[in-house]
Amino acid sequence: LPVTMPAFPGSYSNLERRLIAMTSLPTRFTRTRRAFGAAVAGALLVTACESKLPTSAEVQQMDVASAERHAAPAIALDSAHVRYIVDGKTIEGVAAKAIESDSIVSVMVARNTGDGVNEVRIRTRARSPQTERVDSAKKVTQSMDRKPFDGLLMIDGKITNASELNRISPERIQSVEVIKGPTATTRYSDPRAVNGVILVTTKPKP
Image (cartoon, rainbow, N blue to C red):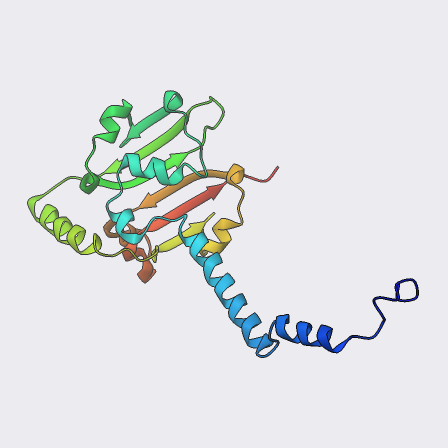
């Protein structure tokens, strides 16, 4: 206290005032800096949410292995306890992962429903020379498109966005299904479906 410390009087000395003036941070444009900081934080949050989703190009080129990789943060897959079902038939995992991306219509990764076995359900389509040429052209175009996912994202049947998905605990997610554009547009009238559809289903609340 100043009373007990004569060497440090209560009033500021000229030297002390000069030192404070030299070392104090500027206070101009405080509101502008705060607004800019909030905008940057918001942009980083949106980017973090979107980074958990595949890009639209990745959706169109998705195969079984990449579907498992993208679903991993939400649904932990034990490679020894996964059942692969292709068009209603159970097959070996090696065969499922060998299916070409162009042949896949949709991939669903589902958490186990009681028997301790997770499921990866794949739907394929018949190939034709014309379809292959169209898909090849799409793949070349989409390989250059690294924008965030701009297709249709739905949680429990409701259209939503990446930030809503980010609020859901991984333990609540029952399954994740990716539907590619050509098939997605026949099922959904929303224009965004052309870039693919991601369907997230959560567990029923107890």
